[in-house]
Amino acid sequence: MTTRDVLLGAVHVFGLGIMHFYGNTINAEMNLQRSGGTAEDVDAFMKQPGNDTADAVLRKLDEQYQKYKYMELNLAQKKLRLKSQIPQIKQTLEILRHMQKKKDTTDPMETHFLLADNVYCKASVPPTDKVCLWLGANVMLEYDIDEAQALLEKNLATASRNLDSLEEDLDFLRDQFTTTEVSILKQWQI
Image (cartoon, rainbow, N blue to C red; front, side, top):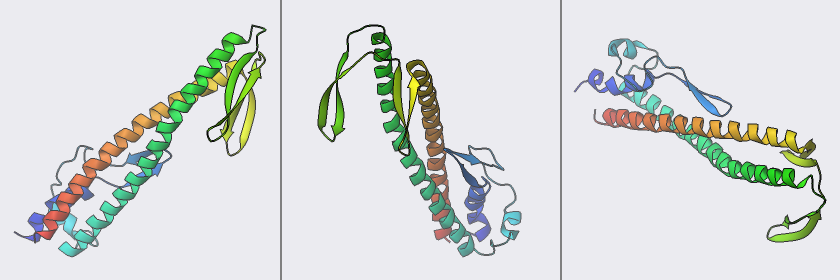
């Protein structure tokens, strides 16, 4: 088996292009289809700078594999953050809907709010048409209930869309792991 034969898998990996982080998603600029494929001209690939030997290609494959691992770690952390954020947004929307129903009555709303970990305080909240939302970075703003509801619904839609996009990106990375691992194994068979 020649180096040329073994490098078919390596060309497959490098033909997919470079991945870039843009906010919450990865954009893959691909020369081949996303589903993969094999490169036609191995000689042209081997003539590229840095592809002189099988060891050089193996080094590149290992570097690419490490980049994919780093991207996977980043995306997994974003996914966890979004998965915890979505239920919080839904719960806040539910509370806002309840407050919307109660704002026309004169009866105060009895509730318990979190004071510290596992410490709750009983409160009586008079009917109101204003709420305060934590926006992050120790910033809180007062909104009308309708405005707050619209903002949170928009945030929920965005978070759900981003979660779907992250799932697609993680699936793509898993495919790249497999392809890169196969290429590395082929290199070690030389």
